[in-house]
Every structure is written in C-alpha cells, then in structure tokens.
Amino acid sequence: MSFAAQPSATSIASATAAPPAHARLAFVGGGNMAAALIGGLRDAGTPAEAIRVLEIQPAAREVLHQRFGVMASDAADVVLDGADVVVLAVKPQQLAAVCRSMAQALEGKLVISIAAGVRTADLSRWLGGHALLVRAMPNTPALIRAGVTGLFALEAVDAGRRALAAQLLGAVGTVVWVPAEAGLDAVTAISGSGPAYVFHFLEGLIAAGQALGLDPATAQQLALETVAGSARLALESEETPATLRVRVTSPNGTTQAALERFAQGDLPGLIAAATRAAADRAVELGDQLGQG
Image 1 (tube, rainbow, N blue to C red):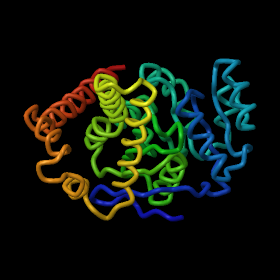
Image 2 (image 1 turned 30 degrees about the horizontal axis):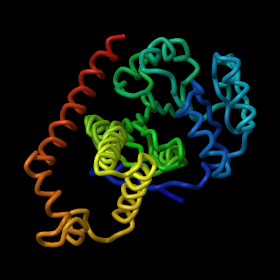
Image 3 (image 1 turned 60 degrees about the vertical axis):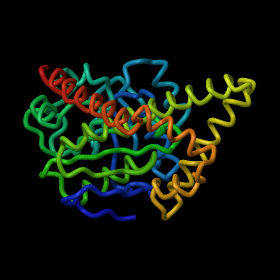
Image 4 (image 1 turned 30 degrees about the vertical axis):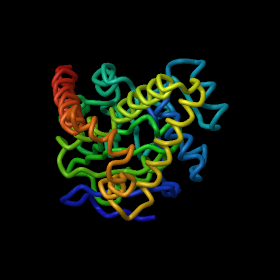
C-alpha cells in the first residue's frame, strides 16, 4: 500500500501492510502503546529481527521477547545501531533527558514520537537540531488494533519517510495527517481524549438502564452493544451521522422525547466546551513539557 506525501489539508488513510523489508525499527520504551505497535507490526508481517526495543525494566524486556520474539535490551547502542526508524515511546516527562542522551546516535534516522504533548520544536532542540521528525497522537483503541492516530511531520521528512510513518502507525488502526502541528491539539481533544468521553457516556447509559429497572449485566450489554453497533453503522454507512440520527427519530416518538431533553441541556454546546477545554489544556501541557 502506498501513501501520498503530507497534503495541504487533513487526510485519512489506513495501513495494514508491513513496512518495507529494509526498514529496521528501534523502540525507545516498551510500554503499552509500544507493545500495541509492535504487535500490530508483527501481525502485519514485520519480522522479529527487524524490531529492537530499548527497555530498562528486565521483566518488561522478557515479556516483549516472549510475546513478539523481538530483541529487547537496556543498552542504547545495541538497540539503535543500524536502525532506520526510532520510535520514542517513553513518558513525556522523561523525553528531554532521553533525547539528549541519544542525540548523536540518531543522525539520519527517522524519529517518530508518540509522547503526548511534546512539540517537534522541543524534540528537535533536545536532539541537537534533528529535523527528520514525525509526531504522532495515537489513542487507546490502538491496543486492540482499532485506533486512530494523528500525524504531523516536519518539512525535512520526505514522502517516502512519511509513507513509512503512516504504515508503522497504521499497524494499529487508521492515520490522519494534519498540515499544521497545532492540529494535533485538536486531534488530542477529539480522538486522544475521546475514548474517555465515550466511556463516560457508557457509564451514564448503564446507570440509566439500571435506574429503569434493568439488572446491571443487561444494562451494560445493551449500552456497550448499542454504542459499538452505532459506531460501526456510522463508519460503514454513506450517510452522515446527522442523517442517521434523523432516520432513527420518529416524530413524537421515544427517541425524539430523549433528544429534546438532550437539547434542553445543550449537549452540542457542552461537547464543544469540553473539547475546547481539552485542546486548551493540550496547549498548556505542550508549553510546560517544552521547558526542559
């Protein structure tokens, strides 16, 4: 599968093919998101010998090796040697120190950061001016290969490397390129934090079902299956969510009664305000994280 260079407007693509055979991948950090990516890549056909992981915890190294067959080490020189792509998957608060410690070893390598909130300008500064940088904002459904990841690349990243970044992150879902890095704050507010909004809605729907007399297990099953099925219908339908909503809303029926109560509480306005708060906080965190 091929991908075009980053366009001038937001674009969406999915990638399930393994990256080119010559691409050698080094993960710095072996936590949950790194493990999700490694698992997706292995399932897509990336050979174990093409992936190495820098991980300081012995138990985590053993788990990574047993699950995926990859080499995991606490020696940075061993992991980074010969790598074409380096995926920074450590906690944002640790990233400045990690980048500074390995800056000289990353020359000529594509660096992809999945550390939330850390801007490319700060990454480049910590890496001594490194410009082959892609910043990624995945979300937690990536853990089950159903994620969506926002991507932004610096101008120095050519079309081939952008395609490679899309393939790597596409191993756990779809990817969305944004033309300006500020767009990743919106990505964070919608899809990065979005799973929590859905879970919170589910909590409320389950509680409401119980209040109406359903047993907890039934209320949970109905809520989960309804949200999952509705999302799938929206994804597979050629109609917009607004059209689908209208089609399920009979005049003066039960659905209309519920939607009118939502309208009284200005649900769209509340969603807009909540996501704006998330985006504003993303900006604030970027400022704070970049002070290192």
